Image 1: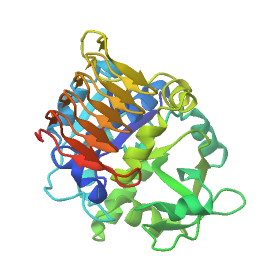
Image 2: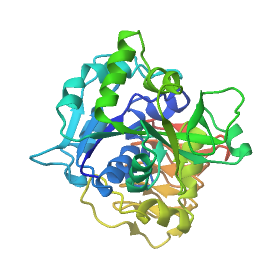
Image 3: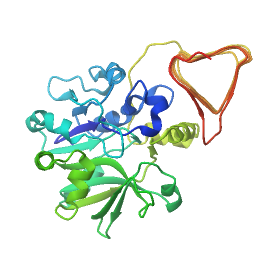
Image 4: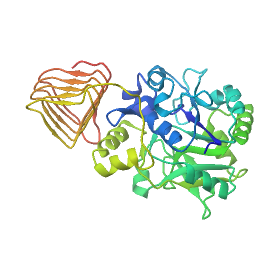
Length: 373
Protein backbone atom coordinates (compact mmCIF):
# COMPACT_ATOMS: atom_id res chain seq x y z
CA UNK A 1 0.00 0.00 0.00
CA UNK A 2 2.82 2.38 -0.81
CA UNK A 3 0.37 4.28 -3.00
CA UNK A 4 -1.84 5.17 -0.01
CA UNK A 5 -1.37 8.08 2.39
CA UNK A 6 -2.84 7.95 5.88
CA UNK A 7 -4.72 10.74 7.66
CA UNK A 8 -5.62 10.54 11.36
CA UNK A 9 -8.54 12.76 12.25
CA UNK A 10 -8.42 13.88 15.90
CA UNK A 11 -11.68 15.85 15.60
CA UNK A 12 -13.56 13.26 17.63
CA UNK A 13 -16.39 13.99 20.01
CA UNK A 14 -15.58 13.02 23.60
CA UNK A 15 -18.57 14.41 25.49
CA UNK A 16 -19.01 11.12 27.39
CA UNK A 17 -15.31 10.85 28.22
CA UNK A 18 -14.78 14.23 29.85
CA UNK A 19 -13.42 12.74 33.08
CA UNK A 20 -10.40 11.32 31.24
CA UNK A 21 -10.11 13.79 28.34
CA UNK A 22 -10.01 16.96 30.44
CA UNK A 23 -6.26 17.39 29.85
CA UNK A 24 -5.81 15.41 26.64
CA UNK A 25 -7.47 14.56 23.30
CA UNK A 26 -9.22 11.23 22.95
CA UNK A 27 -6.30 9.84 20.93
CA UNK A 28 -3.95 10.35 23.90
CA UNK A 29 -6.00 8.31 26.40
CA UNK A 30 -3.77 5.64 28.01
CA UNK A 31 -4.86 2.09 27.23
CA UNK A 32 -3.65 -1.42 28.03
CA UNK A 33 -0.92 -0.64 30.56
CA UNK A 34 1.60 1.14 28.33
CA UNK A 35 -0.16 2.32 25.18
CA UNK A 36 -2.32 5.23 24.03
CA UNK A 37 -5.25 5.00 21.62
CA UNK A 38 -3.32 6.60 18.75
CA UNK A 39 -0.73 3.81 18.91
CA UNK A 40 -3.18 1.40 17.31
CA UNK A 41 -4.00 3.44 14.21
CA UNK A 42 -0.34 4.43 13.72
CA UNK A 43 0.73 0.79 14.02
CA UNK A 44 -2.03 -0.37 11.66
CA UNK A 45 -0.88 2.15 9.07
CA UNK A 46 2.78 1.17 9.21
CA UNK A 47 1.97 -2.57 9.32
CA UNK A 48 -0.07 -2.07 6.13
CA UNK A 49 2.84 -0.36 4.35
CA UNK A 50 1.57 3.24 4.68
CA UNK A 51 4.53 5.53 5.28
CA UNK A 52 3.07 9.00 4.67
CA UNK A 53 0.88 9.89 7.67
CA UNK A 54 -0.71 13.22 8.55
CA UNK A 55 -2.32 13.88 11.93
CA UNK A 56 -5.05 16.52 11.95
CA UNK A 57 -4.72 17.93 15.45
CA UNK A 58 -7.57 19.31 17.56
CA UNK A 59 -7.94 20.88 20.99
CA UNK A 60 -5.24 20.46 23.61
CA UNK A 61 -2.78 18.15 21.84
CA UNK A 62 0.36 18.83 23.86
CA UNK A 63 0.41 15.43 25.58
CA UNK A 64 -0.19 13.70 22.26
CA UNK A 65 2.64 15.58 20.54
CA UNK A 66 4.95 14.63 23.41
CA UNK A 67 3.97 11.00 22.94
CA UNK A 68 4.43 10.66 19.18
CA UNK A 69 7.41 13.08 18.84
CA UNK A 70 9.08 12.40 15.47
CA UNK A 71 7.24 9.12 14.90
CA UNK A 72 10.43 7.10 15.33
CA UNK A 73 8.74 4.27 17.25
CA UNK A 74 6.46 3.69 14.25
CA UNK A 75 9.27 3.99 11.68
CA UNK A 76 7.87 7.32 10.50
CA UNK A 77 10.95 9.49 11.10
CA UNK A 78 11.88 9.52 7.42
CA UNK A 79 13.59 11.77 4.90
CA UNK A 80 10.82 11.08 2.40
CA UNK A 81 7.20 11.02 3.55
CA UNK A 82 6.97 10.16 7.26
CA UNK A 83 4.87 11.85 9.97
CA UNK A 84 3.28 15.29 9.59
CA UNK A 85 1.32 17.29 12.17
CA UNK A 86 -1.48 19.30 10.56
CA UNK A 87 -2.41 22.24 12.81
CA UNK A 88 -5.93 23.22 13.76
CA UNK A 89 -6.98 26.87 13.54
CA UNK A 90 -10.07 26.34 15.70
CA UNK A 91 -10.50 26.28 19.46
CA UNK A 92 -13.80 24.51 20.21
CA UNK A 93 -14.21 22.06 17.35
CA UNK A 94 -14.64 18.56 18.74
CA UNK A 95 -17.88 18.75 20.72
CA UNK A 96 -21.27 17.34 19.80
CA UNK A 97 -22.27 14.75 17.21
CA UNK A 98 -20.77 16.71 14.29
CA UNK A 99 -17.20 17.91 15.04
CA UNK A 100 -16.11 20.75 12.75
CA UNK A 101 -13.27 18.94 10.99
CA UNK A 102 -13.88 20.01 7.38
CA UNK A 103 -12.49 23.51 7.90
CA UNK A 104 -9.19 22.17 9.18
CA UNK A 105 -8.94 19.67 6.32
CA UNK A 106 -9.55 22.60 3.96
CA UNK A 107 -6.82 24.66 5.64
CA UNK A 108 -4.36 21.79 5.15
CA UNK A 109 -5.19 21.01 1.51
CA UNK A 110 -1.68 22.03 0.42
CA UNK A 111 -0.24 19.02 2.24
CA UNK A 112 -2.87 16.67 0.83
CA UNK A 113 -2.47 17.97 -2.74
CA UNK A 114 1.32 17.78 -2.65
CA UNK A 115 1.44 14.18 -1.44
CA UNK A 116 2.57 11.71 -4.08
CA UNK A 117 0.19 8.85 -3.20
CA UNK A 118 -2.89 8.26 -5.33
CA UNK A 119 -5.17 7.14 -2.49
CA UNK A 120 -5.96 8.42 0.98
CA UNK A 121 -7.07 6.40 4.02
CA UNK A 122 -8.67 8.32 6.87
CA UNK A 123 -9.12 7.04 10.40
CA UNK A 124 -10.00 8.33 13.84
CA UNK A 125 -8.56 6.91 17.04
CA UNK A 126 -11.59 5.65 18.96
CA UNK A 127 -11.78 2.33 17.05
CA UNK A 128 -9.12 0.20 18.77
CA UNK A 129 -8.24 -2.82 16.65
CA UNK A 130 -5.41 -4.61 14.88
CA UNK A 131 -6.09 -4.49 11.14
CA UNK A 132 -4.13 -4.82 7.94
CA UNK A 133 -5.81 -2.61 5.35
CA UNK A 134 -4.65 -4.58 2.30
CA UNK A 135 -7.89 -6.62 2.09
CA UNK A 136 -9.99 -3.44 2.26
CA UNK A 137 -7.81 -1.84 -0.42
CA UNK A 138 -8.30 -4.83 -2.75
CA UNK A 139 -12.05 -4.72 -2.10
CA UNK A 140 -12.09 -1.01 -2.96
CA UNK A 141 -10.37 -1.64 -6.29
CA UNK A 142 -12.42 -4.73 -7.20
CA UNK A 143 -15.69 -2.86 -6.60
CA UNK A 144 -14.39 0.18 -8.48
CA UNK A 145 -15.73 2.13 -5.53
CA UNK A 146 -15.50 5.87 -5.09
CA UNK A 147 -15.36 5.52 -1.31
CA UNK A 148 -15.06 2.47 0.97
CA UNK A 149 -16.11 2.70 4.61
CA UNK A 150 -14.98 -0.01 7.02
CA UNK A 151 -17.58 -1.32 9.47
CA UNK A 152 -18.11 -3.96 12.15
CA UNK A 153 -21.35 -5.94 12.34
CA UNK A 154 -22.86 -6.49 15.80
CA UNK A 155 -25.98 -8.07 17.19
CA UNK A 156 -29.01 -5.79 17.46
CA UNK A 157 -28.77 -5.85 21.27
CA UNK A 158 -25.14 -4.69 21.27
CA UNK A 159 -25.86 -1.84 18.88
CA UNK A 160 -28.74 -0.52 21.00
CA UNK A 161 -26.34 -0.20 23.93
CA UNK A 162 -23.84 1.92 21.98
CA UNK A 163 -23.65 5.69 22.35
CA UNK A 164 -22.58 8.19 19.68
CA UNK A 165 -22.45 5.52 16.97
CA UNK A 166 -22.54 5.94 13.18
CA UNK A 167 -24.44 3.03 11.62
CA UNK A 168 -24.49 1.87 8.00
CA UNK A 169 -27.13 0.11 5.94
CA UNK A 170 -25.82 -1.85 2.95
CA UNK A 171 -27.36 -3.52 -0.07
CA UNK A 172 -26.63 -7.14 -1.00
CA UNK A 173 -23.59 -6.10 -3.07
CA UNK A 174 -22.09 -4.10 -0.19
CA UNK A 175 -23.06 -0.66 -1.42
CA UNK A 176 -24.09 1.71 1.37
CA UNK A 177 -27.65 2.92 0.97
CA UNK A 178 -28.07 4.79 4.27
CA UNK A 179 -26.08 6.22 7.17
CA UNK A 180 -27.28 7.12 10.67
CA UNK A 181 -25.13 9.41 12.80
CA UNK A 182 -25.90 9.20 16.54
CA UNK A 183 -29.41 7.76 16.04
CA UNK A 184 -31.81 7.64 18.99
CA UNK A 185 -33.20 4.32 17.77
CA UNK A 186 -30.83 2.19 15.69
CA UNK A 187 -32.14 0.67 12.46
CA UNK A 188 -28.90 -1.05 11.45
CA UNK A 189 -26.35 -3.22 13.24
CA UNK A 190 -23.34 -2.24 11.13
CA UNK A 191 -21.09 0.12 13.08
CA UNK A 192 -18.90 2.49 11.06
CA UNK A 193 -15.25 2.45 12.17
CA UNK A 194 -14.77 6.01 10.84
CA UNK A 195 -12.18 4.58 8.42
CA UNK A 196 -12.58 5.86 4.84
CA UNK A 197 -10.65 4.90 1.70
CA UNK A 198 -10.81 6.86 -1.57
CA UNK A 199 -8.69 8.51 -4.24
CA UNK A 200 -6.87 11.58 -3.02
CA UNK A 201 -8.21 13.74 -5.85
CA UNK A 202 -11.80 12.82 -4.93
CA UNK A 203 -11.12 13.66 -1.29
CA UNK A 204 -9.80 17.09 -2.24
CA UNK A 205 -12.83 17.75 -4.46
CA UNK A 206 -15.25 16.70 -1.71
CA UNK A 207 -13.63 19.00 0.83
CA UNK A 208 -13.54 21.92 -1.58
CA UNK A 209 -17.17 21.50 -2.66
CA UNK A 210 -18.51 20.89 0.86
CA UNK A 211 -16.76 23.86 2.45
CA UNK A 212 -17.95 26.09 -0.41
CA UNK A 213 -21.52 25.12 0.50
CA UNK A 214 -21.10 25.78 4.21
CA UNK A 215 -20.28 22.23 5.26
CA UNK A 216 -18.39 21.67 8.50
CA UNK A 217 -18.43 17.91 9.18
CA UNK A 218 -16.71 15.26 7.06
CA UNK A 219 -19.05 12.31 7.64
CA UNK A 220 -22.26 14.30 7.25
CA UNK A 221 -21.36 16.74 4.48
CA UNK A 222 -18.99 14.64 2.37
CA UNK A 223 -20.33 11.10 2.73
CA UNK A 224 -23.93 11.09 3.98
CA UNK A 225 -24.99 13.78 1.49
CA UNK A 226 -23.34 11.94 -1.42
CA UNK A 227 -24.75 8.44 -0.95
CA UNK A 228 -26.82 8.83 -4.15
CA UNK A 229 -24.09 10.57 -6.15
CA UNK A 230 -21.08 8.35 -5.42
CA UNK A 231 -20.44 4.62 -5.27
CA UNK A 232 -19.86 4.23 -1.54
CA UNK A 233 -19.29 0.67 -0.32
CA UNK A 234 -18.93 -0.92 3.11
CA UNK A 235 -16.12 -3.36 3.94
CA UNK A 236 -16.74 -5.67 6.93
CA UNK A 237 -14.03 -6.00 9.58
CA UNK A 238 -14.12 -9.40 11.28
CA UNK A 239 -11.55 -9.00 14.06
CA UNK A 240 -11.72 -7.73 17.64
CA UNK A 241 -12.84 -4.13 18.05
CA UNK A 242 -12.95 -1.85 21.09
CA UNK A 243 -14.99 1.25 20.27
CA UNK A 244 -14.27 3.93 22.90
CA UNK A 245 -17.28 6.26 23.06
CA UNK A 246 -17.76 6.61 26.82
CA UNK A 247 -16.10 6.00 30.17
CA UNK A 248 -18.06 2.76 30.47
CA UNK A 249 -16.73 1.66 27.05
CA UNK A 250 -13.18 2.48 28.09
CA UNK A 251 -13.49 0.56 31.35
CA UNK A 252 -15.18 -2.54 29.92
CA UNK A 253 -12.81 -2.82 26.94
CA UNK A 254 -9.80 -2.34 29.21
CA UNK A 255 -11.03 -5.17 31.44
CA UNK A 256 -11.52 -7.40 28.38
CA UNK A 257 -7.75 -7.24 27.81
CA UNK A 258 -7.37 -9.51 30.83
CA UNK A 259 -8.69 -12.32 28.61
CA UNK A 260 -5.57 -13.85 26.99
CA UNK A 261 -7.27 -14.50 23.63
CA UNK A 262 -8.38 -10.86 23.36
CA UNK A 263 -4.92 -9.59 24.30
CA UNK A 264 -3.26 -11.89 21.77
CA UNK A 265 -5.56 -10.86 18.92
CA UNK A 266 -5.44 -7.13 19.60
CA UNK A 267 -1.69 -6.84 19.95
CA UNK A 268 -0.32 -9.49 17.59
CA UNK A 269 -2.90 -10.77 15.05
CA UNK A 270 -1.91 -8.53 12.09
CA UNK A 271 1.43 -7.20 13.30
CA UNK A 272 2.74 -5.70 16.51
CA UNK A 273 1.38 -2.56 18.18
CA UNK A 274 4.13 -0.01 18.80
CA UNK A 275 4.34 2.75 21.37
CA UNK A 276 6.72 5.32 22.82
CA UNK A 277 9.70 3.61 24.43
CA UNK A 278 10.36 4.45 28.06
CA UNK A 279 13.31 2.79 29.74
CA UNK A 280 12.38 1.45 33.16
CA UNK A 281 13.17 -1.50 35.38
CA UNK A 282 10.90 -4.55 35.27
CA UNK A 283 7.94 -4.64 37.65
CA UNK A 284 8.97 -5.44 41.22
CA UNK A 285 6.90 -7.82 43.36
CA UNK A 286 7.73 -7.53 47.04
CA UNK A 287 7.46 -10.36 49.56
CA UNK A 288 3.79 -9.89 50.48
CA UNK A 289 2.58 -9.10 46.97
CA UNK A 290 -0.37 -11.04 45.54
CA UNK A 291 -1.23 -10.54 41.87
CA UNK A 292 -3.89 -12.42 39.94
CA UNK A 293 -5.31 -12.01 36.43
CA UNK A 294 -3.79 -8.55 35.90
CA UNK A 295 -1.64 -6.56 33.48
CA UNK A 296 1.37 -4.98 35.15
CA UNK A 297 3.64 -2.61 33.22
CA UNK A 298 7.35 -2.12 33.80
CA UNK A 299 8.47 0.22 36.57
CA UNK A 300 5.62 -0.82 38.87
CA UNK A 301 6.22 -1.80 42.51
CA UNK A 302 3.68 -4.05 44.23
CA UNK A 303 3.53 -4.93 47.90
CA UNK A 304 -0.26 -5.38 48.24
CA UNK A 305 -2.97 -7.43 46.53
CA UNK A 306 -3.95 -6.82 42.89
CA UNK A 307 -6.73 -8.75 41.16
CA UNK A 308 -8.36 -8.31 37.70
CA UNK A 309 -6.69 -4.92 37.27
CA UNK A 310 -4.38 -2.98 34.96
CA UNK A 311 -1.34 -1.16 36.32
CA UNK A 312 0.49 1.29 34.07
CA UNK A 313 4.18 2.20 34.20
CA UNK A 314 5.46 3.35 37.56
CA UNK A 315 2.39 2.37 39.60
CA UNK A 316 3.03 1.79 43.32
CA UNK A 317 0.80 -0.46 45.40
CA UNK A 318 1.76 -0.38 49.09
CA UNK A 319 1.52 -3.15 51.69
CA UNK A 320 -1.99 -4.28 52.67
CA UNK A 321 -3.56 -2.27 49.81
CA UNK A 322 -6.18 -4.12 47.76
CA UNK A 323 -6.90 -3.33 44.10
CA UNK A 324 -9.81 -5.10 42.37
CA UNK A 325 -11.28 -4.54 38.87
CA UNK A 326 -9.47 -1.20 38.60
CA UNK A 327 -7.12 0.77 36.35
CA UNK A 328 -4.13 2.59 37.84
CA UNK A 329 -2.50 4.81 35.23
CA UNK A 330 1.10 5.99 35.08
CA UNK A 331 2.79 6.86 38.38
CA UNK A 332 -0.38 6.21 40.37
CA UNK A 333 0.05 5.30 44.01
CA UNK A 334 -2.21 3.41 46.40
CA UNK A 335 -1.25 3.79 50.04
CA UNK A 336 -1.03 1.15 52.80
CA UNK A 337 -4.35 -0.46 53.67
CA UNK A 338 -6.29 1.40 50.96
CA UNK A 339 -9.03 -0.56 49.17
CA UNK A 340 -10.28 0.35 45.69
CA UNK A 341 -12.71 -1.55 43.50
CA UNK A 342 -14.12 -0.63 40.07
CA UNK A 343 -12.06 2.57 39.94
CA UNK A 344 -10.12 4.37 37.19
CA UNK A 345 -7.20 6.38 38.58
CA UNK A 346 -5.75 8.76 36.01
CA UNK A 347 -2.04 9.64 35.88
CA UNK A 348 -0.30 10.79 39.08
CA UNK A 349 -3.29 10.02 41.31
CA UNK A 350 -2.44 9.26 44.95
CA UNK A 351 -4.79 7.32 47.21
CA UNK A 352 -3.56 7.78 50.77
CA UNK A 353 -3.45 5.15 53.52
CA UNK A 354 -6.70 3.55 54.63
CA UNK A 355 -9.01 5.08 52.01
CA UNK A 356 -11.84 2.99 50.52
CA UNK A 357 -13.31 3.65 47.07
CA UNK A 358 -15.86 1.42 45.37
CA UNK A 359 -17.63 1.98 42.08
CA UNK A 360 -19.83 -0.32 40.01
CA UNK A 361 -18.81 -2.49 37.07
CA UNK A 362 -21.16 -0.54 34.79
CA UNK A 363 -20.33 2.81 36.41
CA UNK A 364 -16.72 3.00 37.63
CA UNK A 365 -15.43 5.87 39.75
CA UNK A 366 -13.00 8.11 37.82
CA UNK A 367 -10.29 9.98 39.75
CA UNK A 368 -8.92 12.80 37.59
CA UNK A 369 -5.26 13.38 36.87
CA UNK A 370 -3.07 14.50 39.77
CA UNK A 371 -5.75 14.14 42.45
CA UNK A 372 -4.77 13.24 46.02
CA UNK A 373 -7.41 11.47 48.12
